[in-house]
Length: 193
Image (cartoon, rainbow, N blue to C red; front, side, top):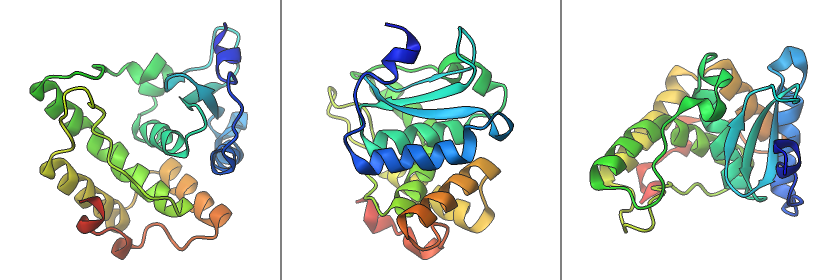
């Protein structure tokens, strides 16, 4: 199966996921708008830069899960220009079953994207759940991780985000009829506990 066909292996039965894809593509699919598309229906999330017969960059998210779509877009928003030219942004990933040290490193690098994901979820009216992404070991998100995500979300609201993240969050809020997702009072630590 090719990367193109794998991206559409499952239909997007979830209407919220389909709306998220439509908003993203309206913002970024045009060649002069970063030439990037959001594609659901995949077994695993992955980022594919243009090439190998594909004229656009592709953010792939799991099945038709809205949270997966928002999480993967958050990683794209955090990744710089050089990272966006590498498969899966050139990041290291350890699968489920990480050690405590690996989990601590995971939490360190996930603060920024998960804070953005929270903002995107608010823009859609969805509940945000922190992903510790390590079910096998039974290590849930640490208190420090929760607090860091909360602080980062509030920092984004007060200090701003990059153009991609701001454009996407505001476009989602318009699509879903939600208030400004950068209102700092929307982000309370108790929402993450």
